[in-house]
Image 1 (cartoon, rainbow, N blue to C red):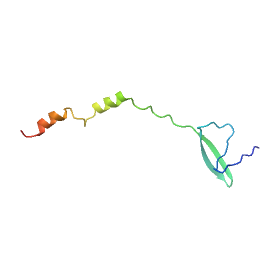
Image 2: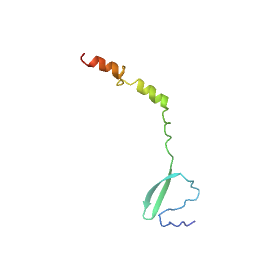
Image 3: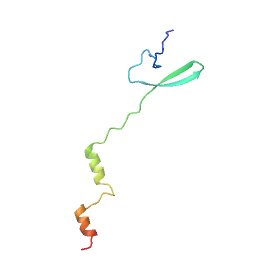
Image 4: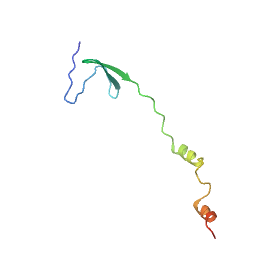
Length: 77
């Protein structure tokens, strides 16, 4: 059985673990801990600028006329 020492920052080196991996720690009993590797969920890719522009253009709250035309229609002559 290998013995690992916890350093001053409460870190422990796990043999076989790679940088960037996540583990869930559960206290199984007095002085016993269980580790389970957490597999991250794949994130959706960021939308492209053209997709955002198309979405904003099709939005119901987007005015269909420009501000000058709106001003002409809403102001009294």
